[in-house]
Length: 522
Image (cartoon, rainbow, N blue to C red; front, side, top):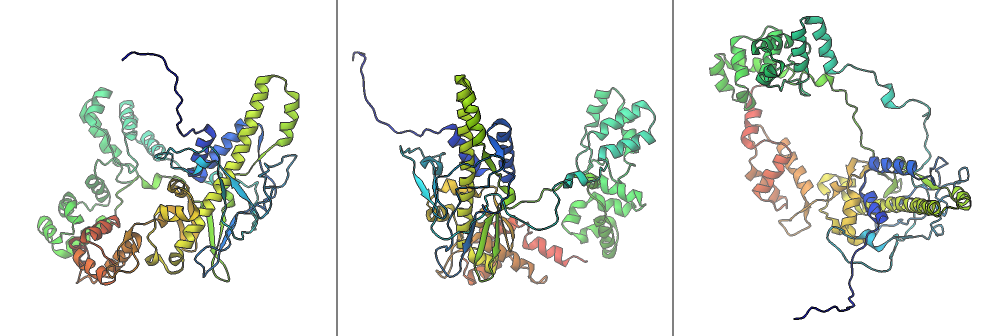
């Protein structure tokens, strides 16, 4: 067959993702902290973007769930043309919309499973928000009471400067050891402590590195083990407990045998311990109580990390007349404006083509960011609203009434792809009357009903197992088979292996372990 040049026309479809579209997808799955960092970076890089510091009373996105209806009443994304008031010649982007009747324009490819789906469409689709009545408010702002002064220092600035474990030990080292070799060994050993205060060093390797005898390192370690806090520089749990018992002069031969057999203590095999320690049952119980009062992690008191509390993305509260009221948390929504006045001014003064292209690119990027933030907020609220509607029984009656739910159940109702719902619910939290939950918490696999009725969620079955075990009689410990029988009688079609898996996920021991624990002397 001869090779000859030829011209062919072929028609094909492919997914073309612009950098902006790729970033829009990333914005959707970002947590509030990640989003805040991203917006701060954009504000630094784009001269046409400004942070909105104006009054934020009129742009909160809210939704109301009225009781007694299958479909949610009161869900309409209604935004003013002015997303925020003008501030020093800063004008917001016009969404080309009228109050109370808004269509959110978006690329069709925005709501597509980009990991597995590659169908492209030439024309963008317009996604219309669900029709209902939504209260006006602020995307990212709401007025609040209280006497907070914005000039006051932050929480981190008011914390006292507490010494670290290393500083605490170095102070003792400088006061107790004067020989330079001992100090060098001590400094190296201090640097080899883990967060709990245990020594994780290889002493033979350290002796080779420092070029000193191993006996010298052991001698220095013995002196370091006398430092505060008591139990520091231990190489395992047994040595840590032994150091603390020696400090109170309670490390007698019987206690030494008990510390050497901590595995039997964990299994509560007190009868075997009586023989090993050569004491009666009362003596073993007293020694075990002493060990329980010791500190297995002597360095834990020097961990001064600031605990970051979860900030919810959606706020939910009950309405006086029934139903639920949802709104986006204004603290989590960055507010940015496009400085149209500045753009118009510099566009007239720039003559160089590269500079004009740069200004046009930044203006387009700024407009895109404002619209992307708006769409992200609207999508989160739509998903959260449908989740609340479908899990209404959970919020009213408790975890026993949590319905089995999958991504497709939400995606079909709000007419979005499952991947979009998955991105929206990742690292997003909702504050409810029952506490703060991640949106993914409300998705649970289904457990069949043995009587043919409505299925149960895996979370409600797990909760039922915990309640049964907590209420069991210490003299009649429930086996996994017995739990299966009880659940089947109550309409939950579960297998023994499922009960065992859920019990282990709750960190509950087997029936044998629980019987031993509950029968042990107190």
